Length: 107
Length: 107
DNA sequence: CCAATTCATATCCATCTGGTTATGAATCAA
DNA sequence: TTGATTCATAACCAGATGGATATGAATTGG
Image (cartoon, rainbow over all chains, first blue to last red; front, side, top):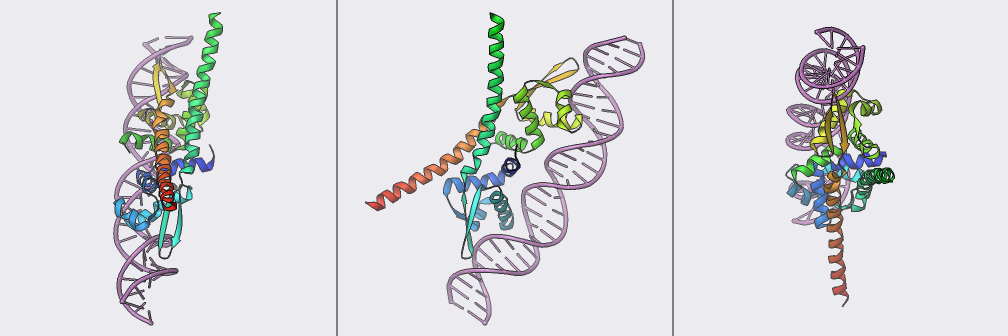
């Protein structure tokens, strides 16, 4: 469990952040204003969440004049799926071991 | 984003809980004492984490005399991978739309 | 140039969170 | 039965977290 993985999990723990990320995945790039209009919280709060999402690599922001357009980076979710896969893998391999053991006991 | 999903994300946000869950996936059932011996925190702290993991469906505990053996339930991770898959799916479908649009403009 | 817009940052605050110690309930061993 | 073991729960505390408001910097339009 690396440090970056921990940041990823922590960042996704908040429903507001997941909401912002999901919206960017669904509907593509958005300005802070557009995101704020649907978030139900203040603009500074949205900006703070976006900063955290950015730090976790989940979004990227590029400045366009006085606006900032944010976009989702779903590739950043890969470590999440990888980790879940490993957990299930450990589980199944232990299950396999048990099966081999039972097979041996059967003989 | 359902309520259960939110609980799952929140529960996995803590590195100690992920560690406990990972250990149960890797090495199978463990008593609270065995888990405490490797966790680096007090037994009550471990019990509290286990209670949260249980509430999220990630582990199950069965009482055996004065011990409690906990086991991992990796199936509970499914909503996590599902959500990640949906996010990537949204992304890709938007990308497809853009491609079709560009294709049309090419004609 | 000046006013308005857009966003980020600073500051502050209530609440949540993860840890501790203390304690109690249940089980086992002698 | 009595004392030890194992775990869960209660009470408490320091620090993190998510929110608000205030403000400033940068850009744009008139």
